[in-house]
Image (tube, rainbow, N blue to C red):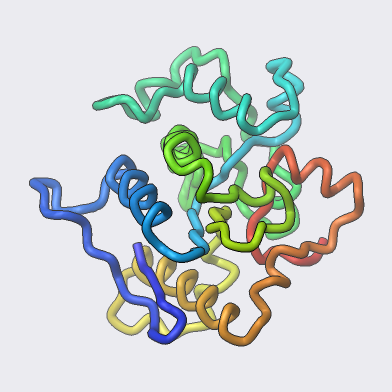
Length: 230
């Protein structure tokens, strides 16, 4: 995890002291809730899918409603419970998808499907592990945060925003130096957003070039911040 202030380059945020010596998803979610309550408006980018393709909603007869999706998903994939992991939930899970399905935003930027498990560069496990923690953040910091674009394409003044990001969009714009690939991805996201805030281009990240029907689909499936063209 990396964090940047407007006037200083992005720096790594170390996890709290614990026997594990690394961040857990629970630890990050709890830390973010604290930050959202205490800090001035902030933009937070998280590197995994926030929702699923419309085919998933149709297959499982789910309403086109993101908060309802979060509740339903957590019931079937309770990966926010202690000592529960994605692989424990995968076998014969009634809420499963198809690796051939991709969200519209994934098609636009050539990202892998949120259902594509067990391959190099897969985000399926991180997505299925992380979505219940989005629900946690939304529950505990509801009045402080805007989940984009599900809460609307425009972010209200004074609110922090949490958005899905895809480091491959930006990680070639900076030298890697002494960072490992994961550190470099996080650094590039934080530093790109910081610089875009400074030069006034950040607002364009929230304005993808979508037709009305495409925008409606993206309001259900989610959208990757900074993906502009189709």
